[in-house]
Every structure is written in C-alpha cells, then in structure tokens.
Image (cartoon, rainbow, N blue to C red; front, side):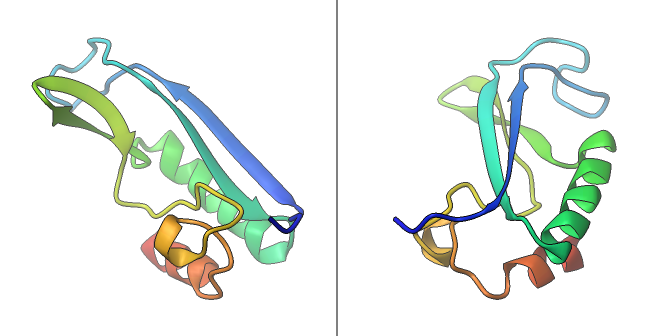
Length: 103
C-alpha cells in the first residue's frame, strides 16, 4: 500500500447519552479509527468532525443479535488509508467535499 501523510483519529467508546435506548448505561464499546489527509481540507474536516463528536453525532447505539453496541453514525468516515471508496478508504477524490456537506 502507498504511504500516506495524514491524521489518524482514534476513539474508544462504551457510554451512552440521552436519546439512546438506555441513557447513561454502558454499552459494549468499540475501537474506532478514522483517517484524514494532512492538508488544509483535512484539517478543516477534523475541526468539523470534532464538533460533531462533541454534539453526540458521530456514533449511534444499534442492536446486533440482541446485544446493543456503539457503532458509527451517519457521518461518513474513512477507516483505511487504502482500498478506495468501496472499502471506506482512499483514494476517494470526493470524500472531503461529501463529509463537509454532511457536517
């Protein structure tokens, strides 16, 4: 895979918020990683993603096989440096524009 310069955003979650199925109760968490390029657009996107996270918009609680878990929300994230759009990775020339539109 090609070497890429950029940011790696990492979150470990196991909590809930008001509006979740069991507010204030712990859920099975996850190890979430997202990648952004180290350029002006990537830095702008990082600021917007931080605001979305602080407002509780980044993650959702979903039920899988009877167990509720923390998962990615509706905001698209790149979870790999490679693999292209089909694998939530780069290259994806439209990603930064698309995610900023969502945010």
